[in-house]
Amino acid sequence: MQTNPSLEDPHTASPTAARLATAIRAVTKEYVLKSETVRALRGVSFDVPEGDFVAIMGPSGSGKSTLLNLLGCLDKPTAGQLLLGEDDISQMSDDELADVRSRRIGFVFQSYNLIQQLTVVENIQVPLYYQGRLGSDERRRAVELAQMVGLGDRLDHRPSQLSGGQQQRVAIARSLVNDPYFILADEPTGNLDSKTTEEILALFDRLNDEGRTIIMVTHEDEVARRAKRIVRLKDGLLRSDHRNSEADRERARVEQQESVAALKQREEQE
Ligand code: ADP
Ligand code: MG
Image (tube, rainbow, N blue to C red; front, top):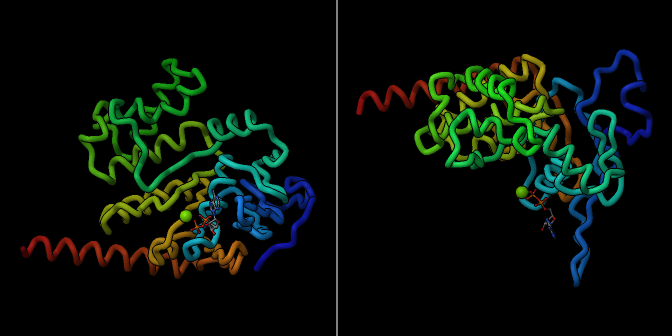
């Protein structure tokens, strides 16, 4: 359920608690229009410990994109606190916010958002380019990330020469190049068929097993069931926050793999 908003420093509150990737404390967001004020978030609180894998769900208009924009440092809360590591983004200037955004958040989008003229390795390096970091160390790091997502034999391909799943793997490698607080994924499998969805979710599983924190918005139940935790929003409020058991996650994995296998069998018969 909803946790109490607390002003304690999350890193010293309890010596045994996991460090927090982010803490959202009584966050509200209002959009002031000429005729009305829209209360997109009405006081949302939850913590995301490092190593968590959270799916954010909720009907259209419930505040998912607003929350994602705040977590991605694209915007600031109207009230409340949003901590990234040690820092409260609501206290930051726009320049500081832009800096955190480009240095410490790993974005993954439904439509990949790759630059068509650049190769796989160059696309992975894009976040570093904005920081003027483009030496041989950076290139080596991008190559390692490409290999890590299984694209070691596609280093000089351009996005148009890759499948959707491969493009999304480039985007995931790009999201990791800055060692982010967390991967922020907005409908990462929204454009993908079941087989490719499975490939991307398996990659998320692996990254999460290695300790990466993942926060993803999805409207697909079978995708959300793969996360460790589902946070549901409704009307700008946190409606529920529950953990998926390992057994449930495994069941979701098996079901997804079965539907991929069934599809493959059908294709072979055709
Ligand atoms: P979701 O992503 O869950 O569909 P949003 O966060 O996009 O929800 O929207 C939550 C509410 O805030 C909706 O009522 C929406 O119309 C409103 N809203 C979102 N962005 C803006 C904006 N830039 N200006 C005014 N109202 C907005
Ligand atoms: Mg939205």
